[in-house]
Image 1: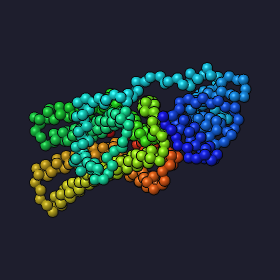
Image 2: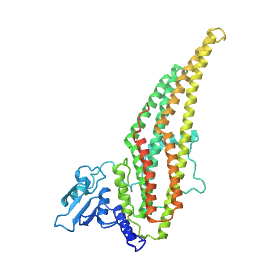
Image 3: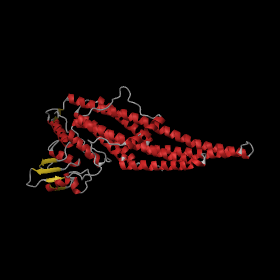
Image 4: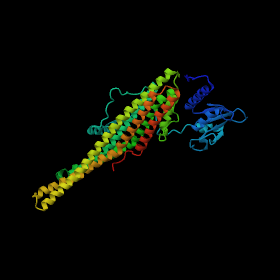
Length: 457
């Protein structure tokens, strides 16, 4: 039993306690039964207020009149069509009780349904393709740092929820590694194909068939990687499993205050993710506890642990992404700058030779021209590959977003740590933490949803 603690017997305080109980009830409800006279609320937390809040939250309401001999009616915005949200008692669609099934009918099963209890499944190809991105991090010195001493290692979760979170987190990480490694490999192989073609300028003609075969093999590898990544939907799995993992992370704290987050999903959350998160929330249910000062102090500690661990994560992520973006940009700039210097140097040599200022053997000049051709084609090809990796990964944007969310979480952490412990304020702060992480996830989803694995341009 989840027992709220009444704050006092004064009429005003009792009304607020009654309102709080009604709102906790709404936060875990899929359907509300209102026995109501149809009139305005007699006070704070009255039936009219709770019914209105249910309608505004998109919760179907069955209204049974206490003053008229009328059949019960269903209030549900969805009865008016698709449902646009934000309905009020004056605008919400109404229908007979027989229409309740239309409102509560579960969505038709789809091929993209998420099984939160299923372990991640990745074959050898997925694990192999996770390597290129890790090698890129190592080559650029951008590996994420380990948590410093004193940083919170993670958040406490109920065992059942922790298992679901661990599966979703592992599946998201595996799909992300494969997706990132795949596009790094594709751009690297594309640059490699250019280098193989250019090497024919200096190698004996007898090896040209082998070079041609090698170039074909590289192109086939790019096509195969893109095909495998598209069929296994690493891009979609990464986004959706990460969405699910973050919903479950926030649910671990909000559920302690009676908020199962059944409707607090971002606009970009996939329906399959929302369904899986809601199923986990219903399985979790409310805590078996009485809300007293000790309980609230424990919830505040859990909230601070969540905020602290996420601050540490976003701080490390911002460092990693900034370093990776900066060093790829620097390497690309050196390559393009080097191309210009090679061209200028060769033109200067040609001018000096033509003006008689420098004597250069014709064979040596021809050999230099060949190597200049190779350099001025290879350097831009490699630089373009690095730039393509930067753009596909949006490392600069990821660094900026991570830094901003780390700053906002820090401000929230200070407020939570300083203010007195109270149920209502803790609920507001928990929802603020959820909103911060949800908004970041929506921005992240918006960025990466438009960047599926494709052939390098």
